[in-house]
Length: 236
Image (cartoon, rainbow, N blue to C red; front, top):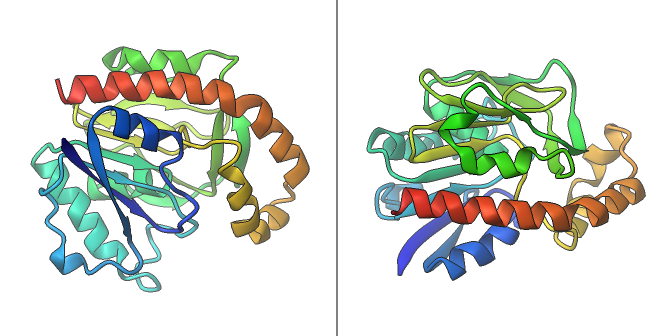
């Protein structure tokens, strides 16, 4: 068995469909709450894989949320040793920051809802991602911040509103701004937990729910194929 550490920031932004893929791929998963974790006791290199999940705060809000500092340091330590690391949404932003890139509020406003991904200039570096670029496959976007591409990173995908949606650092680290892991059932908790954000952005929950029912099954299949291919490549 390999060991994976999944760091979450709000309980309902969990591994989603990725959890089953990891279990079937032979991983023992430890879930850790970033907000309550004693970071001094976490060995950044003790796990075969670290996944850093999403959350409703900004990388630059370190005064309000001081745990972000050791969290970035953990990611930076793994990147320095080229240890397999995956970042999703806030996790992808934290990875970009750990790699020296700027993270900041997006000038195109909040991007919340289902939409397509477009190929980045380095998509040939990770051909397994191509299945998620099919126009019939939509991914979930749910963010207001964005980031610059880290130096030396592969630009894998963008969206209509934000250029940087997926990047890789070599074959060991992968960052997503968008969500590939969500399920229609799991999103029911998001609609409640992020109710204020959705209302402020003028997003209709019934409409978003209907889109999720339509697009989430297709995403789960395409994302499942991708996760398996990426894990097989990283742990070959």
